[in-house]
Image 1: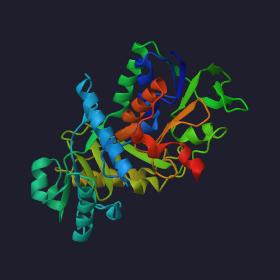
Image 2 (image 1 turned 45 degrees about the vertical axis):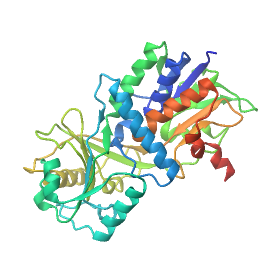
Image 3 (image 1 turned 30 degrees about the horizontal axis):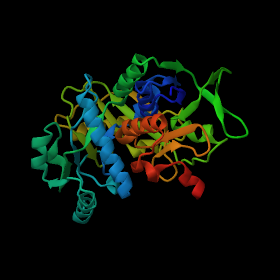
Image 4 (image 1 turned 60 degrees about the horizontal axis):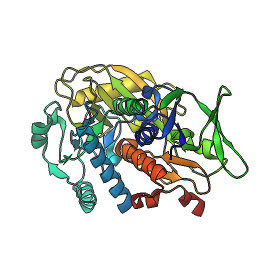
Length: 376
């Protein structure tokens, strides 16, 4: 049976859900509040990993998400998935804005990290700086003291490129992508949603609504469900092209660094995020310059890095840190909301789309249903 589905949000979660529904023969309208470059997905480092999992169910979900990305890349003509591996020479407690990458991480913290990841079945290898140089020669390893951690299964994904491909699937199957910002859901006293009202007063009707609106998710769902969040500010710097960019994801003591598809570097650093309070606030130029100099100093040849863009926005995070996915009980509204969209976004969108069409539930999502908040 064909239904009219309205998907709010064109980040990786909304794009993946809309593409799945459209490919399953459903009538899909995807509401896009801006270009893919403006979404939280575009501000993401795009780091694909299992390391952040804090429960067995979440680890399983992240592992399946990584495998789904690798599988889908085999069927794609675009290169949006990059199995680069990751080199790490700084624990989270060591990450601060420093003028050099020299750091001595305690043996105890290294052993604890190895034990934690090994308990999840993840490959991680302690190697020397000399061994790391054979993996990533663009880093100035002479500055690094102590052990480097190598995780060969980590990867990164170019989310705007993947979203563009998913949008193509929506259009290929007759779906529409409509530029619109949603003001509110149109609900009756029984929590049945007939559609949405946009900020310019337009009404868009639907049989089912999927909210994949990032940091706006909680507010949009207020009339029918409590989906608490703990979202915060995220800052992402993209540099001008670099002559010899690293091929590997780098987790250095003061930043996370990866290349992009155009030879630029994408950099995130928690210290920059502490300097801004709102999405519209600019990061102090001096702080950006200090970070770029520090990252350049970590690389062979000490290249002078220049910022092509500094993006500041809300990083959407559910209150308990775990994904929220599924239909809200007693309604015709579904939600898909997570901080780990790079790793699990494609998988969550596909699973939710299949659940809506087939009427069955995937048990791998049992721990991540929206009703868990009502139980609290």
